Image 1 (cartoon, rainbow, N blue to C red):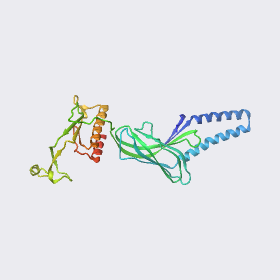
Image 2 (image 1 turned 120 degrees about the vertical axis):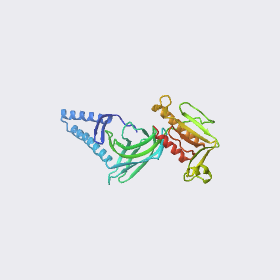
Image 3 (image 1 turned 60 degrees about the vertical axis):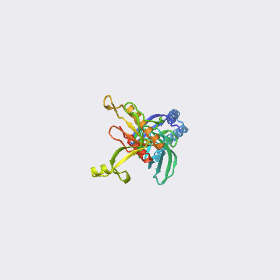
Image 4 (image 1 turned 180 degrees about the horizontal axis):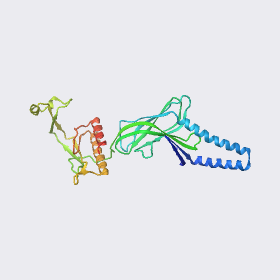
Length: 313
């Protein structure tokens, strides 16, 4: 449903009242009837004027009653991918004991939200003491934590003269992973400039000895190294299906952090490579200037890497 543009807006505390074009036209007619009644002294025109004024009063009272004692809850997944729609369920609860609510639309708290809702949640009728849920698609624009603390309830009920909104709390919290794009997967060892999308492939060879961790097999223990250090150490081998994705966050020429746009491109490219390689069953590790993750190809490993990339800055 298309919302008519407002002619006049009044803001007070957590509410806004916008006069629609229809409402503006009605008020113009109201003034015309009032002037006619005063000039002619016609009692019928005075009755029409009183009826028009009552419409405005009733509109304000009913819209306020419709917005009172409502609460909103949202069920959002633990993570989303940027620029890809994810499921979101909006639940609207009417806490009034006897009065239902009509024609309620749930909107973002401001016009610069980092996400889009499609379709915009609309509740035509919410009975008293009931909860109504509507599934919608949530599309986040940027990676990182997504937190929503409030939303707006809006209504044009009952006559469409005014568009009234009310801001109420809404707790939504999730993590937005980097955007995934189609990429050309490596077929052999690749090299690139400045660490942008570099992929390294490892063969069937011993490449690291690390501390023993719960779940490691005793057959992989490197006994000579363990005897020297006094702690259990294990050998790590990687197969031909293992890849290391390098992500460089600084400019080699200046040793300064890269520009934000370049960083987003590199993070998105690294995430895309990791995503598609894991989907093909390859073991993948992510390496930056400071750290390197373990190899893995499970869904949990993929989520861990995406979570790491979501918070890189």
